[in-house]
Image (cartoon, rainbow, N blue to C red; front, side, top):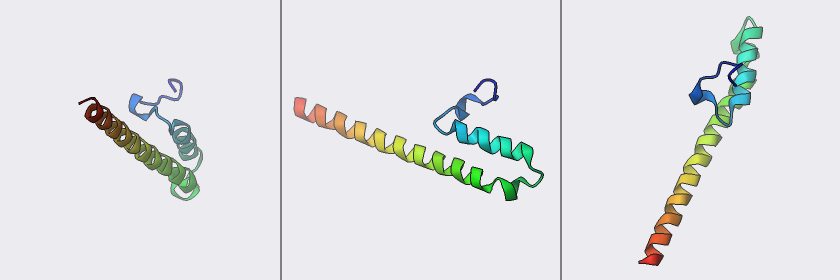
Length: 72
């Protein structure tokens, strides 16, 4: 990831798709036409990752609330 010059906030679960998208942008003269698949895959991955993170946060919050209510 250092060799690919990814910024720290770009180093996440979808980094491999970002690298493929950037490679496509560099290789084609008309990136909007040729790279739309890679862009869609990357954005879809980011959305799913965010959704899973929110669900995990809510799950952990509910479990913590349940533990504190049981111990009281």
